[in-house]
Image 1 (tube, rainbow, N blue to C red):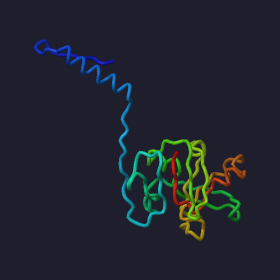
Image 2 (cartoon, one colour; image 1 turned 180 degrees about the vertical axis):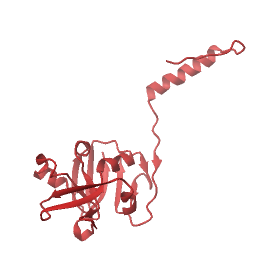
Image 3 (cartoon, one colour; image 1 turned 135 degrees about the horizontal axis):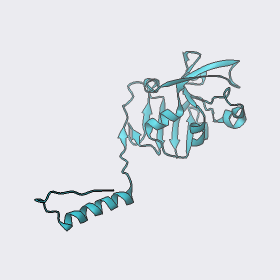
Image 4 (cartoon, helix red, strand yellow; image 1 turned 30 degrees about the vertical axis):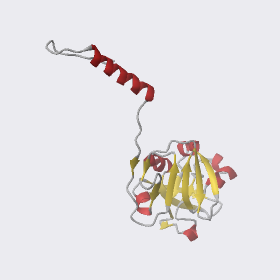
Length: 182
């Protein structure tokens, strides 16, 4: 509800009220205006880039991140058993959902691509339903390319038995270099 008030000495013309009404109606039709904003620029080697349906960028319509930028996000540790490691190991890194929120992602899927051009599609539902992380360390040590890093998508396999199937193992892309949000 909008209340327009005026003092007796002021005269509100029909034209002014009409202009206000037109403006308010146009806002309701167009909806809130979203303006892309910029993220800080990486100061070290870029290890991950994101493009597609994102609102925040730092280079030519996409977002680039170095390790320090990923480390600046709240960190989560998942202790899991994987098909690629022996026994339970601890991976640490930011939650993928926090990362995507930071760039203003609004798509339905993530096309994730590795250094060797291997590509997987991850539904956004995975990110919202599960604590998927962008792992940057394994048992307290930085992931190197040799160790499937510097970024490895890790699902909480030990927390949900239903995740221990090929579908989710295949989505756990290592040596992640880029994501396109669609």
